[in-house]
Length: 319
Length: 285
Picture 1 (tube, rainbow over the protein chains, first blue to last red):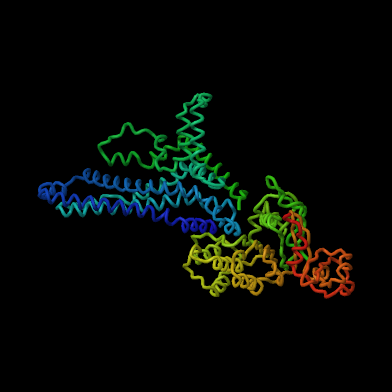
Picture 2: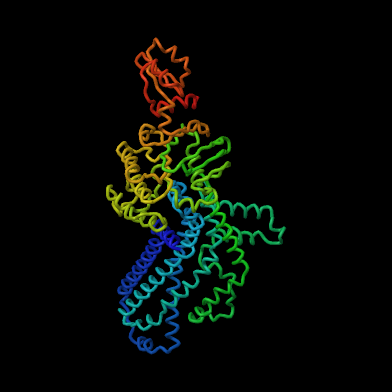
């Protein structure tokens, strides 16, 4: 267990730039852009003669409980949205991390150093899976929620300058609940992303050169062949089914939230109320995906590909 | 002599060539063995087989373990430096020490730090900021702090200047080697390791063509400096090799009695380099 912790730590050392700095910089850039938009808004507003709330403040401060809940939910949506942005960046980082994880050290021959230590290839590969499926998303969630809070704070300050004390709304936000919900979704994410992580690691461990090209070309090429020759007709499925389930799952499952098409449907939802939307798309909604065999078949395929990556890591010779 | 490595009929075939062709040898504990051979003779393949980094046929036991099946256990007792400068470029000195200290049960951190204190390496220095010689210093400090029973060195000093090379072997002898440890080393700079070896193995075309300890080597092989008038007599004794220096001939003999040779001229011990050249004659032809 101690060895595994240090293996994961090693991955973090090596990929500090991708796992930690990339989301952080994205968050900062996004916040700065928002700040600039606010400043531009202020300047434009002044030129137009300025505006100041007078009457409405009164009503704002006397919102009923329902109104407060709506405001809080709206802020939570901001937090979720900001985190989604950060997690999209994390997904791109993880994609390339997986492609390089078992290839880069073969290319620069440092694999010979790692292999001189009493660490099994199984632990090495699994530490990379854990970094991709758990460590990177957790960092993304934390950065995203904190960034979302800063954004909400900025908006509040601007509103206050205009005489609208939004502070009480800020208290209505639930950053911990949002973070907790998102963290709770990470196991589902890991399960969902497993076929992509497994496939990319397999290519990374197997390719003698250009793992990126192989990883993309093989599934897309297969899908093109299937479509041209109508091979899926044999199974009474459409070529589109193949596109979605083979190249789609092998390459795009790394995108968080991709599972929602397999979750319960939300037709009965009241789309006017952010609070009820948030409640409806809570954890149980997301985890209803587990009823779909798609998730499980994908996860099993992912596990098999990871086993393949371990085998190649052990026996691939090219140094 | 308890054997640390026992190889019988070691064979490895690549697509169109035979890298190891039934090589058999045994290496005992407390020895420093030089595995010497021309390029492409199978040295690296033999070492990779010992380290469980390649498949092969034949039998091989390293410290009583099968490197193909029990590699993870084996690596607790075996250390290797394969080639120069294979440390990951992004790692810092202190992180490398931290990492090895936490994954290797036989690593002695204090020892490693005292080795590092003798170098110019800084804890926050990254490998990519180091010269080749410094990378080897770091690697050696890490490896020497591990109490392993077998150390494999594959061209560990290739491309280093002579200061680093001398220092490398000197540290190994002074601070690392003892009767419980075994070192196997391959290199092309034969002259530099000549004095530290206890055993010598020549490999050619995947076969072990010479396997001897250094004392026996002195008894078996003799070099004689012969004047022109006695050259013909010397040739009758079937020398391994003959070369000309300043109008005299130098003959290299294998297993010819010493008194007989002393009659011919000045007798001396051959250098490994000369022996190597004589043994490998015609390799690239």
